[in-house]
Length: 135
Image (cartoon, rainbow, N blue to C red; front, side, top):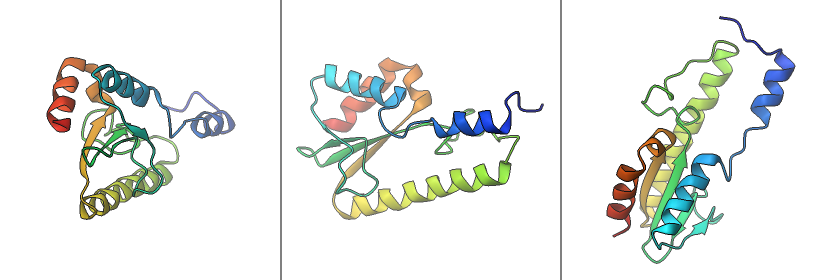
């Protein structure tokens, strides 16, 4: 199947995707805040600038898009039809950077939870996972 957008339209579309304050991140922040937890956002002095930082607990949460960080769910396994080599390299570099950042954070004594975009489909299970992580 060919792309329904022109290369210029596709470029515009992809360049407009944000890295901060994404919809999955905002949903997760709302849930965590409503549970009574307070956090800092995108702390620049930590490896990978975690999405949520809980200094009191020495814990961080990353909220990853399944496609961009190559989750093993059906959304993360999508293979682009156009410019496939570029996107494969881009996504693999994201995954490798995530791995390095996780190791660096662990060396500094931080515990890490990754919330995947697909996990936001079951909020009850997600809340249980967050509570178990933050206690």
